[in-house]
Amino acid sequence: MNLAHLLLNLTGLLLWVGWRAQGFAAPARAAPVSLAGLLQATGPVHRGRWSGLLALLGLLAVRAWFYWRLGGPVHWVPSLDLGVIVLPFNSVSGLRMLLFSVISFVRLLVVFYLWLLLLSMVNRGAPASDALQRLVRLHLGWVERWPWGLKLAVPWVTVACLWYLANPLLVALGMVAQPQSAAHLWQQGLVLGVGTVVAWKYLIGGLLFVHVLNSYLYLGSSGVWTYTHATARRLLLPLRWLPLRLGQFDFTPVAGMALVFLAAELGTAGLNVLFARLPL
Image (cartoon, rainbow, N blue to C red):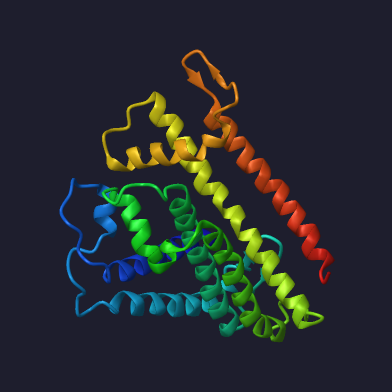
């Protein structure tokens, strides 16, 4: 069931990306890039533009009904890990399963845009001719033009607001404790928002891993590998002064991956302690 849920979440994300892409203006023809070709719009807005969004809403609703009907017989008790707190769900209520369906997808959507924000900040100097970076900019829309400091604050504020809106329903369902005050609630939301940055470890780790492979193995001439290589090199700039080269081997990407995951673990532990001590 967990694997099926993950696949359905990824399907929902593809529906969201496809729906957003239909609003993009058709780009000038350039050298084909396979990933960009999958996500770019191929022409002006179609009359059926809203079909993707409607399909996504239908997917979230229909799978919630199946979770409700099938969760009990297969003894599936889903939970949602938000970093500093785990929301418990069960299939005794259709409302709970609908809430699980929606919140779990929203969490994935937040991670997706977190990744886009990181790519936007790291590759802010990339030329307009870069097809993949152009997609990042199109999906971010007007947020792309914001300074990097404001972009960094976007997930914190967004998640804090989502937590503030969802908290009354979560309390009513007995899934979280009643906050002591409005200040306590906002503090919880901000800690949750800061914790979302930990999701960058998977993108950074993946980019650096592919960078290592592409440095010693020929993966082809696709623009995806060129983009990955350039992004990884920018991510590693703070470590370039370290003596991590040994002959033909460069251990900087390995050190970068280790530092990122170590920082993520330490940051998560610290946020868990901070969340438990709230309100301040």
